[in-house]
Image 1 (tube, rainbow, N blue to C red):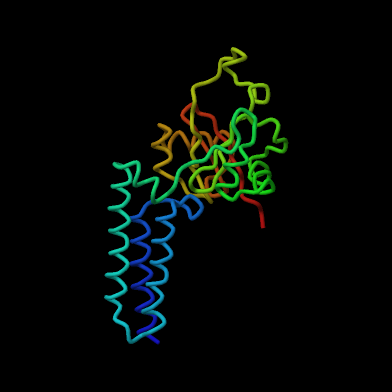
Image 2 (cartoon, rainbow, N blue to C red):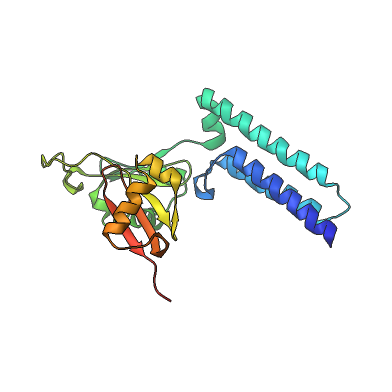
Length: 224
């Protein structure tokens, strides 16, 4: 039993490191070759776990060989466009100037129902409002609405807005996040000053966000 636990821990660490070296993509965002490598790694890692007579080293070497191959292929696809298209394919325009390209849909084996579902996932319920739609290599649908259907921006209405600022979580579950404070050019002293003004203790904060402009939101912990 102890041997199985140790082998499992070793392979878990190795596979985690291997996937980390490949990048931070989610499964749905992976290119076909990346998905293949991920599946192969999972299969290879399972072999030493199922068969204890197999040396763990063999699985480790195979995993890292696949990772190295994937990294090399990623570098090559960055330099050579044709190789990238060969391995990953290319984006297909499904709707052009408001018109559905039926041949393109047949090419990627996409049904009308599939198209409608992809549009609904982006909160688009009327296909007639779409000017262009591109099916990306990872299966996501990028959509550009017609001019008349696009939301009005502050720039178009000549409305002056504050400087763009990204709100960062500075307190989570009562704990101050130093990295976030640095990112928004703030400090623990300023943070505690805000909390004192609101008569809130840091330990009672479930989530607090803060941006560079000093805008913040505070969510208190629910009482048990």
